[in-house]
Length: 411
Image (tube, rainbow, N blue to C red; front, side, top):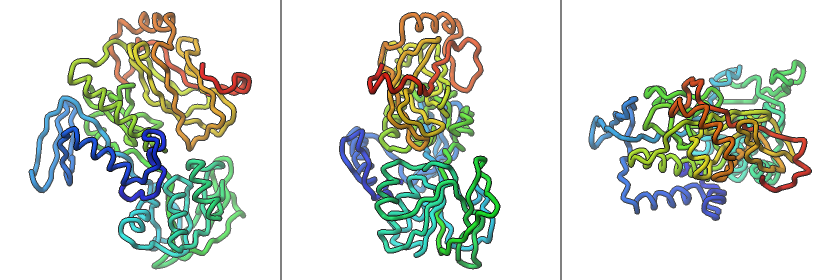
């Protein structure tokens, strides 16, 4: 995917550089080659078993059976298409996912159309609205069904505001018109239940409709292996080592949950690689896990479990998304009734991932002792499995009341 992302903005956090997608990919490809990592291109994995046997095929080796001690799942995600949202109307040509249009323009050199409407304000859709404008097309509108944008603020500003492209919040497409080619779409405002409001419909003439309506983690192989999936993220439930419910099978990136920054994908990949290396070298932490839970204002938290030993010995990084936009809040981590760490955030939005790093040793001895006493007898516990002895929960929540008084310090 990075090869078609020729826009800049990659690597700002991790590499302190502003790179294009291909440049960012090349940086880590070079590192992998320098380490002597064997790669098999043009290879299709057909199955992964609970015993970590991989069945794959390519034109050079044919059918292969590979027995691994550790497997890392990094299949990424796929775009939602028209069928996922059941848009009424005819079935003409001219309806593309934003990613497909991006490949046509950036890699194949084809223009999908000249008068464009974008449904959804995801980052790829915003970037393609700008790219189509730069290539000479007229972007009539970007429509978002939610009352807030789905993309990063910087993309809203750079791709829409700077290009003069209108954004209509709480609007959606209710009908696609045209016979052989798209001739226009009917748009309507939606209510608080995201249902179209009768009488608010209006038509936008266009020849192309780009869909930027979200991504779905690609987990067919995960299901084949028996990996437990999280109902909210759609990806595997993982520990802080990025290990799934199946011993020796790890996961990272968009296959776990949808990211907004590639830097965080890379961080997760490093964590999964380190966890797999510790497993095969016999250095994986033992003992029990603490479950994480999304509290007030938080939609989900990844990882879903944290090793008790890791809370004491090293930094633990948590990723989460909020349920609604808010300003001047504190993101708090609570365990055993005690707030062990909090971080001030001036603005939080559902479209932007919130990352919280709990420093090593930040959890008090009392909380650690309580955790060990409750779940020590239960032994190690993997995500996705019911375990009444899994210990107290690490609850993440948004606190609004005292945020302004505490300022920007971390506690």
